[in-house]
Length: 302
Ligand code: KIV
Image 1 (spheres, rainbow, N blue to C red):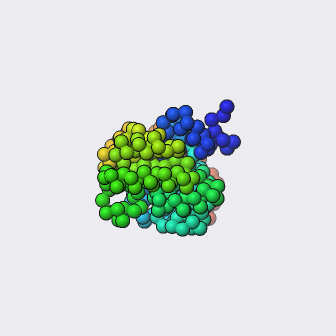
Image 2 (image 1 turned 135 degrees about the vertical axis):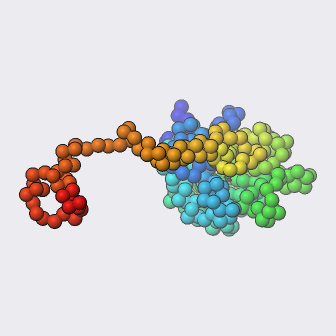
Image 3 (image 1 turned 30 degrees about the vertical axis):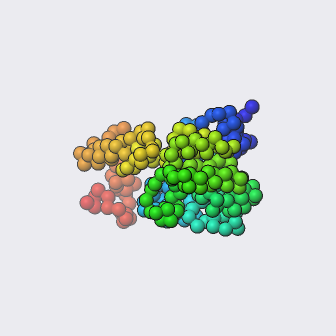
């Protein structure tokens, strides 16, 4: 049996099957075409065009600066770079505050950018809007715990959520609300591992953890953290490569070769027939016969 839908891409039904089979699901963020191609070739089943785009790619100080147009632009690139992965687009700040707005903007990610699902932050507070999107036939991934778009409302400092009895109960309610609203999966961000495991046990949709321990149904990492591209790696992330150092070394070696005149060398250089050049520079028979002025000085004019 085929592991993918008719387009060749994984569907939310196949993600549900992975979950039902007890397979842990790996998700990564992606923001551009070449990286998406590589992650797709690596077999990552779900790629999230996260609004972390704002901080890790566009250099904003916060995700709240990211616009719909920016999200659509990067989602299109990731969709073009993938054949198999299910692409989830993050709905940016204030793009899903009412059911109508949520449905309209979620629709743009499918219609204009070619995504297969959207992600929405917030539990109980977002349930009505999630439901409206799901009713329109658009798959939704929820996102609870630490929700970066609400950073200022949550005290301004990145913090593990759900540590007190009340906060843990609120998080359980959020998880159930997202599931009942029809989400096909839910991200748990910065949640103590026991609470994340307890939520995972109580839901019948996959939980995708980030800083939420190994008891979730799957994990998501920001790809720049995974690749060691940022200047700083959050505690919950594990760099599997050190591309910042690799890029630094490559850029310095290149600049040194240019300064020394050793780049480009013969292998990176094209030559032409010397006789043709002679003619072009005015040494040919035709050129000698012609007195017509030429816009570029020929050797005889120098
Ligand atoms: O924007 C993002 O990258 C995210 C993940 C951290 C889940 O929301």
